[in-house]
Image (tube, rainbow, N blue to C red; front, side, top):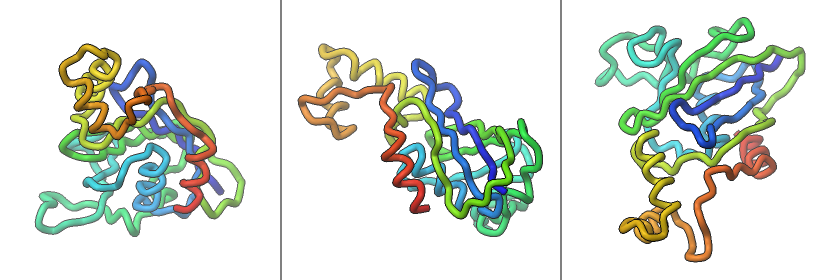
Length: 186
């Protein structure tokens, strides 16, 4: 079987940023995390966790760290998606970068009889915010700066996100074919 999920960044609008993934039911949450990272264009450089309602909800699924974990967590490398997800419309929260606090709503859209071995990105919208830009508030601010050629931080922010002089930030940009090719290597 395969699970089809819609993963959407919370508090990002104009445009919203989301991806639709199809993943094998036997994927672990750690492998699902890696697929989400690739689908969104994140760099997998920060801590992550899954839970039913975000912070202070249980169970928490992550990579256990006895020095940091105040409460028991489920090991993301051992817990399979099929251990948690069982019915369409079920939701979970994926938190990435617990400092910038990127909150993703993960919705199980459907369960299919399809036998797949790899994840696939089948749709999406919006450019993923750059790592370390300060969460949803920081991304909104960054987009405002990059739309204003007269803004005092325009040149600095354009360089920081890696844009050439002739390029502009396109918040609408999403390349499905490139994302599909990358995610299928997870």
